[in-house]
Amino acid sequence: MDNNPVIEMLGRPLRLAVIGGGPASFIGGVHRAAARLDGRYELVASATSSDPERSREAGAAFGLSPDRVYGDALALLDSEAARDDGAEVVAIMTPNDSHYPYAAGALDRGFDVICDKPITNTLDEALDLVARVHLSGLIFCLTHNYTGYPMVRQARAMVEDGQIGTIRLVQVEYVQGGKAREEDPDPARGLPWRYDPVRGGPSLVMGDIGTHAHNLGRFITGIEVSEVSAEVGAVVPGRLVHDYAAAMLRFDNGARGTFWVTQAAAGVENCLRIRVSGTRGSLEWNQELPTRLSFKPLSGPAEVRTPNGPGTLPLAARASRIVKGHPEGFLEAFANLYSDAAEAIAARRSGVEPNPMALHFPNALDGAMGLKFVEAAIASSAAGGAWTRAMLYYPVS
Ligand SMILES: NC(=O)c1ccc[n+]([C@@H]2O[C@H](COP(=O)([O-])OP(=O)(O)OC[C@H]3O[C@@H](n4cnc5c(N)ncnc54)[C@H](O)[C@@H]3O)[C@@H](O)[C@H]2O)c1
Image 1 (spheres, rainbow, N blue to C red):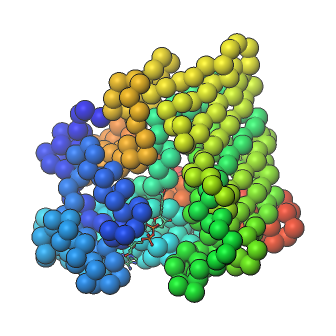
Image 2: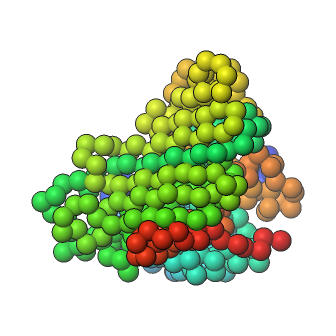
């Protein structure tokens, strides 16, 4: 990432506006750090809260000019679209129910968009965004940030390279413990948006982490979940929202898999793990030890791949900023999505073909695939675990 293709193409960084992600949010600071890391964006405008005063305070703390700090997201979109020096890219990190109106509003005004997951709360809204992106030609980057880790990209590249053979089995789990305390199963009395299905979406656990797990499996393997048999519910007594989902998976190439996500596993921190087994060997990766990718060949001793270590493929090499043995992690992986999106946006704005290596960030169609899976898993669970179609057929031409 030493070179800066955005500066090469535009002569300056892209102008970025952020919606959501105020000082108290977990992910806002991550987005802003990710945007800064490779010098491809300049933050020029913000609307970080639904409360205008808090929004203004946060924008002042970012060092923004007062006339570029907005108390309302739609005012930001209107004003920035009207300025000659207005933002070119809008990043959205608000509660889930507002992703759709803000993303649609941004696309309609000609902004390229970076949006946090889940893309929307319904499949219909997600498909509407897919259509808007398709018709406008704008870039839409969905921050399924785990796809930015060098060793996740290495896994994808090894699958593409045929090193794993034909994929037969996929196991993915995303286990957290943040909702394991049983004395207050439903803090919706304080109305945090996640516990309100209108705002947080039809399934808390699937919106928070299930879409990440589903997307990671698709990203590494390149195959799609065609059918799902699921149970989605709550393990904490008295909880009104979903805190776990378990599913068997059938893939479109005939492979089989399992999917296990929960936020109620006491003491577990952020254990996103995947195992992919093909006819020639298996890959294993764990987000809490992200610089280690295990490769277990069918015949031969187990091996470990590391960022920029022996056997690094080009897709992984471009995702590392530092020589082997120097750990990179969550922030750098997040930044990889921002930086790849920046390269694609600058190419679009310069009228040149994008570097194909920059196009591995998840997009609106990936988001719609995730929503289709969420809706299928919930429907399957309601039908006692009946096998349910989970794959979206979308005309991409
Ligand atoms: N990619 C990831 O790993 C990851 C991790 C955490 C959260 N997220 C996603 O990020 C989004 C936000 O989650 P969070 O945990 O930061 O939530 P949060 O409640 O901690 O923060 C939400 C932020 O949005 C602001 N906001 C709310 N309504 C707004 C509006 N109308 N206009 C402008 N700003 C508004 C709030 O002031 C707050 O700063 C969610 O969609 C969530 O799924 C993604």
